[in-house]
Picture 1 (cartoon, rainbow, N blue to C red):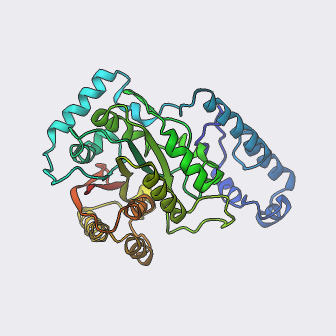
Picture 2 (tube, rainbow, N blue to C red):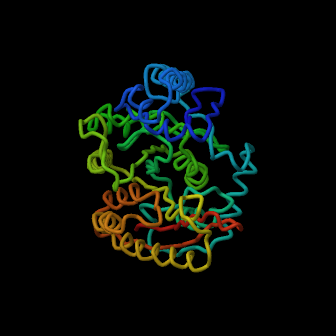
Picture 3 (tube, rainbow, N blue to C red):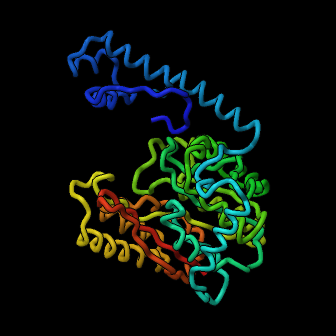
Length: 367
């Protein structure tokens, strides 16, 4: 897997090599792995060199190419174009499509402008009713001083919260950097917040929110952070990465110091079930109903505003339906004052006709 596309060619390996490659964890020598699988050491060394050449092993070659990639992005300050362009490149056409979707959903008629939204990071064609249900609540509101998007780290290597100094781009233009917030976050949390910022290159969860934010608020400063799964412990508590608790405390303090109006977005999908996600049996109506019942049970805890209870409930369950955004949803609750009113605006399930996969998502508003 090469999410950063550090190498321009593909490397094909036979299926029987995969269990061998799985042993490359930096804990055993080539000779030890060769002995376990009863293969000649020179053959295994050739495989290692091929992986190293294609930047598929963490080591000097990978780190060197990673640094080159970061330097390239530093030259423009813009992340490579990504998922936000799925609707095309014409700003007028894309803006018109977003307006049409916003017009198709009902006005949630909330008593106040939401301070925060939970919306999906599904592709637009499957998820637009959920995106629109959330962003409709911000349509017509005064632009805030900033928007902070909490994303999900799907493909990156960082096990802490990952920020970035780079900006995103969409068919509606490039995002505006929130330099004051970046400086305060760096002062409070140090270099660890940017240590894995290349994780933003293949990530779609923040990029997909940008066109909607631009359409409802215009050129507002946008910051984005990838939040890890709180059910998985950090690899090392050596202070070189930023934990969720540290991030929430640091961001809360920074926003208080900056003042003004901040709107927050948690870019969150829920369950991922079916054979594509490791389940043995194809999906059926009973399984979809079971997942919805579980989703709504977990959402009820989220809607109560109890961030610790939300995480603990999922930890005790073992996350049986593979929710992918527990981290940013719990962080969002942690940034609220504990007395927030949270409303579920919409819940949906997206699945394929072959019953091979299903992803559920919701749209929520925090007042």
